[in-house]
Image (cartoon, rainbow, N blue to C red; front, side):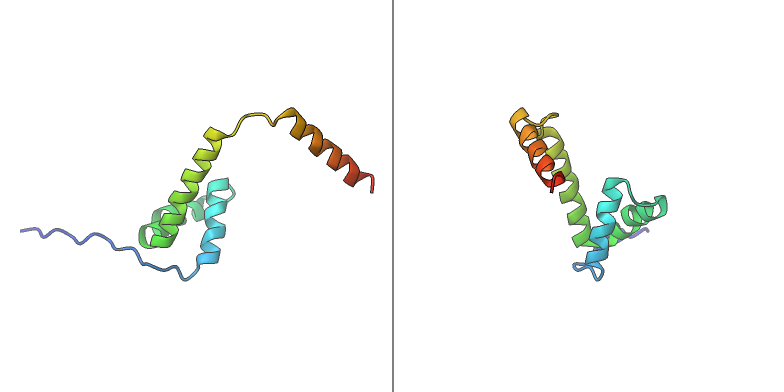
Length: 91
């Protein structure tokens, strides 16, 4: 008779949180190597609850930003930015 396996429990803290956050950003920005991406998504997230939560939050935030942002900045904002850049360039 087969006994059901206990679900894999994720650890509740991350010992490399700063490095993991950098790697998370690299993965989502497309800057991670294929090996880094695979390790982070398929191995690390399976066992680390804080990184799993951060990953899901970051993905959700990026999707919300994509759907809520307009494709072009308002004209007055673009003009203000151009003026500021011109001022900085002339210094």
